[in-house]
Length: 361
Image (cartoon, rainbow, N blue to C red; front, side, top):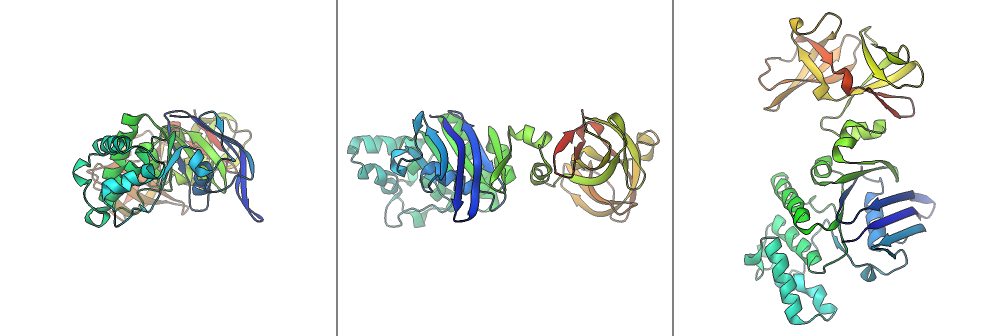
């Protein structure tokens, strides 16, 4: 296990800046996920830690050793790639042992490490097989096993599940979480899949346009997004955004474009125009008698998604504003219905024109 520290790290390809002055500490034994859309710089940042891309400026420290100028093999980190990169003519045992033989470890030590990794990954019965005889999930486990036998200071995962089908992704994701719990190893995991990030991470680093938007625990990032980008990127379905007029500071009404008003308590710097953000689970389809007058507004239902434990209603307010509301799993609403919807005032976020978040108390 080792702490990984980045201080004011930057990277450019010619005139194009791809990493801009990033500082970050990954604690020893922590699983940190780099999350962001394509082009956000997450894989480049991982490759800079691995030594596969150079660092133009700033420092990288791995386990207390300044490492930005070290060759990849001297950094003592192991990388698991999106493609498994297994040797097709070698058995699982030979694939896992190959790197250790290259550095001249004794055969007894190599076999002990391979057996330990095989037990950890529950693939003792696969050691004599070749990659063509394995499923996609089994091949990915071999790639992870090849990293484990190196006994590195840290593991780096670059979208390792993206080539698997949906059911196998779920199963392998659980196996990775269990592996981290057993090993207590330092891990950095790159993905654009927010479900992987939310279920695996101790902390999530949300990247956008080559810089860090927010760092926090999965629920902090979900419940307290620092910017409109984070609020829109995290969550499925995404957060609703509705244009509103804030009528004053402190506990004061916000007014929707259809005239509906309700009170929130958010530390906004000034009255004016904002975007109100609220997640679908905090927007409820309600019966007329369930809320006091003035606490709900009218909407027309378009699409209805029945997800078993809950129902999502894609609604339109009278002024044409669209949003997603939630009802119970046994909901009887249908497309075309007129419904009443209410908002949880404690789950409100306000975003100014720059995208900065002001959360309701």
